[in-house]
Image 1: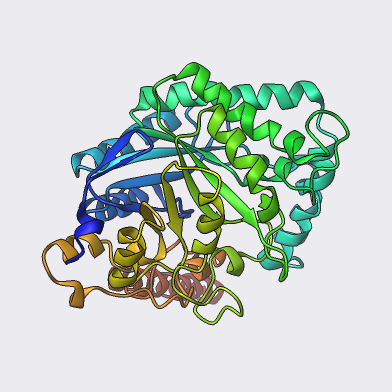
Image 2: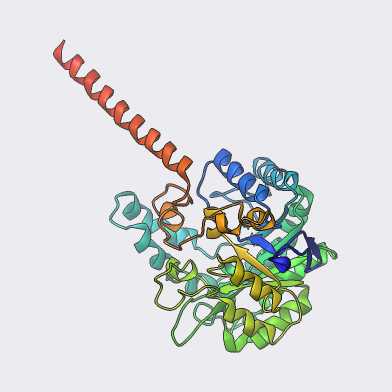
Length: 396
């Protein structure tokens, strides 16, 4: 059973040992906890891990290939995956957040007058003026930086490059955010230019490197997602990206709306079904013969096997399911599909944990809850001892 899932596949120029990919995920963990998470996922049998949000320049908020510490961090991640016969892809991105505009919200966040949920739409409102008014010179510098970052990624040991089609690529692509009047705005062809130049910069520097593109699709009627490409524009974007050097497409819903739309729970009003974003793959397939990776509610092995066997998608990406059970692939391989811990798409400890600054976890992670209980009890004991000490000094 599950022959297609377990069959090796050439995904855009990179041979994968099976069809399962760990989707790019924000973890919010300490380095050591992150390394252990990567080790578990890689050891569980998936063919490739996409390391999310690798910046194309120096970063004040995360790890960067452009400094020694960040470079060493990525080298270690790659080493852990490779030791477990798992490929690694660098998701190169440029944030579309206006740092200067963000600063005015810091006092509100620190005093808790603005919650993290309230902060997200406020930051999204800053995207349009930032993208629209960005100087032409800076645009060119950023697209060129994708090529420089790709060279560093290859040097670190990454097997593939993915261009993040949300973030700045997605915002330049979107008529909602991009109101420019130069060659980067207006028509679909012009709005595709930023992403095309980013891809071209990578291809120019690395002629043989497989390039995946995270293609963020915006849906209308009903409206979901604000960045990215509307379905009617795929006929423009897909051929242009392929011509620029893309060798595969990772297709999903566009971002910059509620996180529960791009990471939909089981009770989502529109994206509740298994394979909830695969319809976007169907749209993309009309304009390319390149391999397509689907994502969204892919938990059931029988469902995933059918989508792959029917050729609807060529690879399946999972995040929450491999957090729920990193051994998903190995259990299928060993004939123990009935023992898989199925993701129930509750979002309690994955998205919920991230939003509560506890890191991305899963309700099945007993070890995490054990650590949390120890941590909470430690804090309670520490507070109790502090109070006792304080009272003692008051009494003498």
